[in-house]
Length: 185
Image (tube, rainbow, N blue to C red; front, side, top):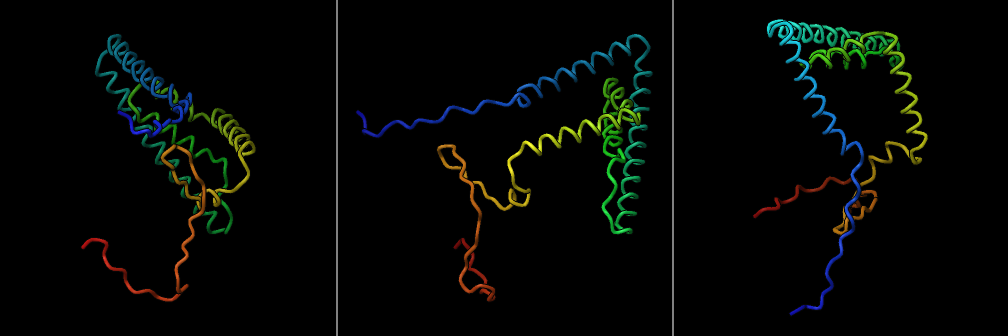
């Protein structure tokens, strides 16, 4: 027995991006490699040596983050006193990332964190990042971030996205309104 209603057809699932596919695999491989390297180093020396290495990395990372944060706050404070924008290119973000990687337990993350503390590596990475962001922004559709925040996205049951602006058109304009009754009874 059929009702005569057509069976709903759903659009094909959108393809997963490469980042969403390979990021979890990369993180899992990184964790396995970190644990394996820690066990190799512990087997070659001792567990206490590995513990001291991890503790030294944590303390050094905390000191680097504290120094970079203090420098960033000082630059911001000086810029606000001058009435200008803060200077970019201080490398505070990369210093903080290096400190964070030093604080994460593991020898590979410690090595990458130490690399990020070297000024020529910081300059090279910041230039590469600026060029990449510039290229992505030029390739993006015209519009501003303000336009993006003003738009609301409504998801329809068929999966399509309808873009629009939310405009409240209430009678009375700026006149004060009475408090509304509660929705529950």
